[in-house]
Every structure is written in structure tokens, then in C-alpha cells.
Length: 279
Image (cartoon, rainbow, N blue to C red; front, side, top):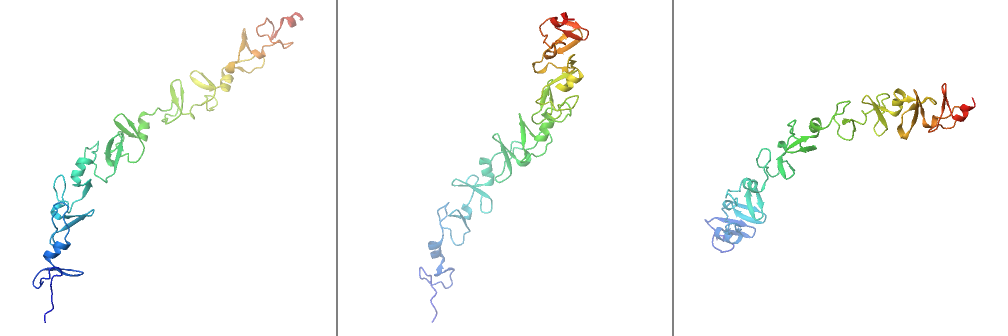
């Protein structure tokens, strides 16, 4: 006796017919499609057993229904992007949502390396230094109107140069006679001591520390022989070709200060009136 071979659902014989074997038994094609086929999210019709089915985010599609919402191109074998409820091919997505490179005016594709600054976008390889024309990449840069410079090129092109060593000043520095200097380059003409933050003066446009200027150019006190620089509020007295610090202008005999008083010269000495009257 021949064994029964029927559809598990409609019980019709499957001899000589196409069928699909499921875990719980065989099904004829119409029953399989009615009970197990998914509904296409686009056309709302069943996706039959003989159709290529595509699955994306809990939704099922016929192959010919899985297409770009804008240009209607099939996305079955194409890269795509989901924007809200819409499926878009890369071209349509980039055209509508991606930025354009400010340098080459081509679309900056999603996932590609890019640089964004001040509301503008560049391909990484298009963002180059306006001077050396090399890609800046992730390095620091300095904008100058519509140009962009890597730091070395900007410093070479725009940064002031030290009057002494001619190298660029990137920060700090000293200004002397409207000229820029590195702090370490601004030194005393005599002893080469750094003058930044120190009192100094000049002779023939050359800077000197107080000590060197006093030793080289200042008048010497006739009493103590030290330089009379006038710095720090110092005052001095001159008589003929001789000079004294205020606190050194004293009577040679009684040591009384003669500043603002009458005095009598006696050869190399100066005397108050009382001491001169005893002579």
C-alpha cells in the first residue's frame, strides 16, 4: 500500500508537484506562500518562494522594490543610506545631505576623512598650506583672511625677525627703538648681560647696562671717583670741569654738605666758608 504524501496544510497530494519541506512537514507552494511568506514593506504584496527577498531593519522587500527613494535605482547590490524612513543610494544622499569640499567643489563622501573649520568643509588632502602647498592634516594652522598656513610657513612669512639673530620671534621678545629682539638676544653691548627687565641706557644707539655705561661714558665723581649715572633719582653738582654726587659734595675739612651753599675752591679741594676763613 502506497504511503500518504500530502501537503501538511491543505492535505492535497504532493506527488508530481513542487513542495517545500518545513520542520513540521511538507507544504505545497500555494500553502507555503500563504502561511510563511513575508509581506513586502514597499508594495505590501507577499514575497513568494521564487522571489529574491531582501531584509533590512525588520523590514522585508522584493528585490525590485528595494530601491532609492529619489532616483528609483535598485539598491539590491548598491551601498545605501537610510535617512528617516527613506532609503537613498550614496549619490542621492551625498547630493542632498553631504558637504562639498570648498577647494575642489566635489562631494565629501560619508566616511571619508575631512576637515571642518568656520562652517566650511575640505577633503583632508585638499586642505593645504597656502605657502608650501602641503596638506596640513591634523597639524596646527593659522588662518589669514582667505588663506591658511601651517605654523612654520606662517612664522617664516609673517612673524617679526629678531634684529640681532634674524630668526623669527614666535612669542615674547623685547622692542627697542621700534625693533624686535629675542629676550636672550637683547644684551648689553659691553658685558653681554641680558637687559630684558633691567634698567639700561644707550650710547650711539647701542644698549648698555648701567654698570658698563657708567664705566665707559659717565662722568666720574671728583670725590669718590665712581660714575655719576643719574639713575634712581641721583643728582650731581658740576663746577668748572669737575663733578660730584650730591652726597659727595662736602667740605674737605669738616665734611659739611655744600649742596645749595656757597663754597671756596682750594686747589683740588672745596671748602665751606667757615673752614676757608681759618686758612
